[in-house]
Image 1 (cartoon, rainbow, N blue to C red):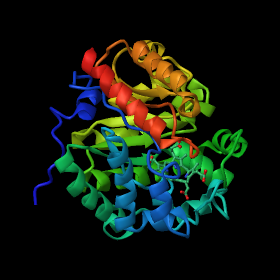
Image 2 (image 1 turned 180 degrees about the vertical axis):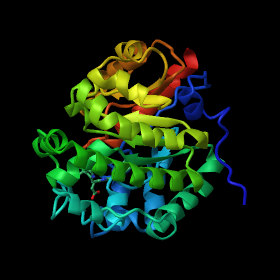
Image 3 (image 1 turned 90 degrees about the horizontal axis):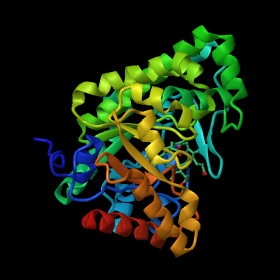
Image 4 (image 1 turned 90 degrees about the vertical axis):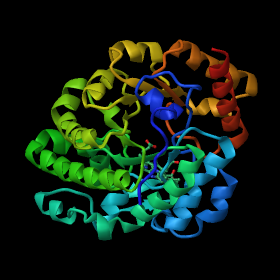
Length: 352
Ligand code: CP3
């Protein structure tokens, strides 16, 4: 069977990722699926979110819900950054209202053995099945599917802290105190990301996003020394697959240049950094994705409209722009406000 992905030469999201003009400005939202949608709550089921992720029919349905409701220009696979770690048997779960938690956090070289390499045909078969179901539904609609993985720093932060952290004290203690162990851990996590992303693309994903959500906790020199080699290896391993690569983190205004050097076509920008500043810092070598403040979705309609326009004005008609929020959709968001954003962005592209 030939895999038919949406046409890279006519699909707005795939054109913008290569900084080429498109018939409209593409828009999608990080966390567009999930708790903000009543239809998600209906199919999510009891049990942990990992149970829903491991069920291809349910995961595919959840992925499609925001495409139907909003008419977004891309779908993102319903999964989580910790899915490959969970599949490796490390012992990680996602606690409701908390996030990823490990009962026995990573602390010593012996813990490396708990991160065994993945065999995609057995360990990730549920994910391959989900991607195949999705590509069959999405390609006739011309909507590309984004696959994703967590980057080594962000994943290591959950493994070492054992839960979400504010200060990353244990992570930084291990990074600076046991640099050799740090690099061995990150090398394993990079391998997991490469295996996961490659399987997603081979099953039909049209783009990938590497989430280094918490890398903004680092100063640029430390980012370059302790993180960049591993994330660069992931991006390099994906380079020949012919799909756009997106690299994202929050609080990364000072890291935009090194994050662009990691080798993605697109860099995500959070709401703290205006797009024109981000474009200057990345020297125009990448397309930008972002960057409406997710909290603006909760604001009155006239504020929302003005802030969407501000993002568009900041971008100033540059073809290398994928409209998104600066981070994920907040669970309390009103779906009608997100629909409004899609309508405004698409309408703006028609007049310009
Ligand atoms: O629509 C999409 O964006 C796809 C689904 C998706 C999920 N997680 C599903 C999910 C994606 C892309 C992720 C990535 C992810 N997971 C990241 C990177 C993006 C970011 O937010 O920076 C991170 C840091 C995680 C780790 C994680 N998983 C957190 C912090 C949480 C939230 C905990 C909570 O309950 O508030 C999760 C759980 C999670 N992952 C939910 C969803 C829909 C909510 C829990 C549920 O529905 O049971």
